[in-house]
Structure formats: C-alpha cells, structure tokens
Amino acid sequence: MLEIHAQADATGVEVLAAAVSTAVRALGCEADAGAVVRLVGHDALARLGAGIADARMSLDARVDGTEFVVVLSDRGEPIDGPPEGLLDLVAAGAVTSIDARAGDDANVVEVRFVLPAHVTAVDISDVTPQPDDVPTSDVELTIRPFEPSDARELARTIYRCYGWTYPIVDLYHPERVAEQTLGGARIGEVAVTSSGEIAAHWGALYLTDSCVETGGTVTDPRFRGRGLAGTLGDRLLARLRERHVIGRLREPVMTHPATQHIALTEGATIVGAYLHYTRPIQQVGITAGLEPARGSICVAYSALEPLTPAELSVPSAYRHLVESIVVDAGWPRTFSDSPLEAASSTEFAVSFDTANQRARIDVTTVGTDLIDALDHNLAQLHESGVQYVGVRLPATDQALAHVGADLPSLGLGFAAYIPEFWPADVLILQWLASADVDTTHFVYASPAVESRVQRVLTEVQQAEYRGRARARRARHGRIQQ
Image (cartoon, rainbow, N blue to C red; front, top):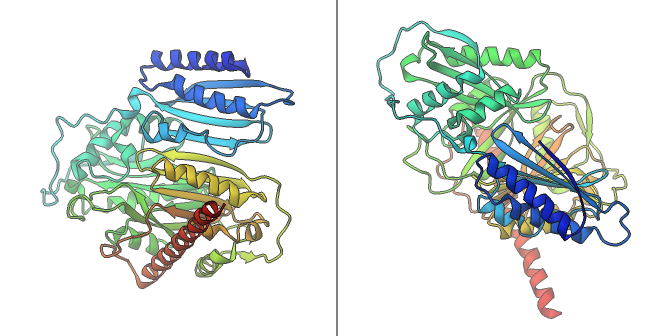
C-alpha cells in the first residue's frame, strides 16, 4: 500500500509520520499512528550516527486482514529492543503489537494498528443462550470444512453456549476469523444445519509452518450426544496429516481435567505449563464467576510425523525438566555438553499482546550478550506493566547451554519445551510479574500432569527469588557507587 524512503533526519521522520497518519485516518483507524512513527523514527536517528553509509529510513505499510501493519527499517547500529516509550503506547492500546528485531541487513520495527473490523464483535441481539439441559434436536447435520463465511455463525454458536466467557477472544470477532481462514492461517471442521447454523466446530491455527494449535472446540447443547466432537476432531487430524504438519499443540485449561484428558488419551505429552498467562477468565459451568487471578494453562504436544533426530543444548537449570519430557515422549533427542562459540550479538524480536498484558521475546540467534539483551528488554517490559513474558530460545543452538547458564537470575523459569517448532526445537522460559500462583483451583487429569505442573511452578518461583536477589544486588551496587 505504501513504500517510502526518507533521509535520516527530522524532516524525513515527519514525512514518514504524515504519510502513515493520512493512511490510517483514511482506513477509519483512530490511533495516533504519527506519534508512533515519530518515536520509532527518532530512535533510528539516534542509531544512524556518523560513519553510516546508508543513512536512510524505509517504511512499508499495508493492510493485513483486520490490521494495518507499518514496518520501519534502518541500517544503523543494531537495535536492542523496542524504542523507549513504544511499549507504553502498546500498553495504552494505541497499537496491538510490536515486533522489533535486528535482521541480517537492517533493523526492523513492525507495528500493528487495529482497523475498525478488528474490534467489531458479533451481533448477538437475536441470539438466545442455551442452557445445558435444553432438549436435544434430531435435525440433520452436514459435516464439512470450515469456510470464511462461517465465521459469523461460529461466533453466534459460541455466544449461545458460553456467553462472553469463551477464552479464545478472536472467535467473537468474525472479521478476524474470516481473514485468518482466507489467508490459510486457520482451518477447521464444522457440523451445520441446512440453514447454516453451526452445531459444532473444531479448528486449528498455524503457529509456524510445521506446528498448529488446535482448539476452538464447541458443541451446541441441542446437538450433544452424537459424537460430533470426535468426528470433527478425526477429520481435522486427517487434514493436518495430509498437509504434513509435524506438531500439534494444545493448551488445556487447569480449571477442569476434560481437555487435559482428551489430549492425553490421544497420545499427547504434557510439555510444560504457562502460569498467570491470560487475563482472569470465567468459564460457564466450570468456574464460579470470574476467576480472581490470571489464568494458567497446560501445554500438550503431539508429533504427527516422526521427528528428525536432534542434539540439544539446554542450560543446566532447565535440563532436567527437558530430559524428563523427552524420555516420557520417546523423542530422538540427545544433549550436548560441548558448547560452541556464540555469535557476537543476540538476534531477537519482541512482540506484545495488549489484551492479556503479556509479551514474547523470540531469540533466533544466541549471542554472547544474551543475558544483557534479555535483561534490558525484560526491564522495559516490566516498567510498561506487562504481567507475563515468554522467552523462546533455540534449543539446538549449541551455544545456549553455556551462554544461557545465568538465565534464572533474570527471573526466567521453565515454561515448555517444544520440538521442531520454530523451525527447530524451542526452549520456552517464562517471567511472571508475580509467581504467587494459587493452585487450589487447579484440577489435573492424572498424577503425572500434576507432577509436571508443580515442577514448573517450583522452577518459576525459584527463578523469581533469584531475579529479586539479583535486582537487590544491583540496587546495592548503585548505592555503593
């Protein structure tokens, strides 16, 4: 839609800001896009000092489904995270997410603004919620693949069954789901009546080219007892296998054991748990109103195709948990104790989820500055009000075990280990604003699930203690100086 190159000076920044502001207004977006571009642009100017041959800034902007994406790039000194102040704008809701990274030949900051369709929820003025004891129906159903035009009816069915309490918020927004389906990021199976009303659904969202997250499962109470969930799940699994998807992720809640049990009976391995991961949720028929604390979930993984053997390099603090997962699953993984030399700088991207007050740091290359780079960005994220940060690390990078030995001192505890995810195996760590996790409402499908979740919680709480101790030492050092 837009492609602009500007000189790296104050005038160039204003040119870029004005162009984006005009485009955003024309699309009906109310966010102050100009202010965001100015912030990113002036950060680039600070890094484009003397001696930089290509002192230009480039801007690409386009509509991506229900969002307007602005990408600014420069060839200055490597960026070490989102520009100062940008996270505050994200937290305030001015933008939905950011992605700041140092690429091979340029620094890139990607900012996403929501278009009106992104926040337009389904119209439920004529939808009546269905009680669980509603009489069953014998209406004939057709089972077929989910289509973009089904998005509205899916949202209506979810509201009919769960009100506004369903944890996957996207499904209440038909335009988002339709665009994801059109773009190939989402697939699914549905059972529909002759009038197009959705009786049941099971879907999958692509997380990477080789891994999907399945879920969005719903069955209208009027059509229960027909085995629809099983039928749709089998059809969806067959499609995933046809597409040669390697891994299937599920995120069972810990407020009841049903989804955990389904994952386990279908051969999944519990590979971790994300603690205080979501905003407080309410689940109709499960929780007594809105949960008082942030929600936590299990992470379950199934290999749909044989995994390629790999050698892992995991910091010692997390290795025992990864080893136990690998042994339980029988995956062809070995562990290296011979660290290779790390790159000079860490390459990573930072993204932000406004709705859940959480962020993610994706490390693609482990550098000798890994600890400092993560420390800097975690501090920024904490100051902006983030409640949860997930850090994805390449577990097959042979420098990780050595360079990442001190990661627990940043308050980073184990979250999950996922094979062949991105594009290789990934070790996921988690930082919590508070590791005081109330487990009294957790329900487990088996003692094995309980044991793994409790081990993750213990690791996170120990990491929080080490992180606070490190912060106290740092403050003491500043006072002494």
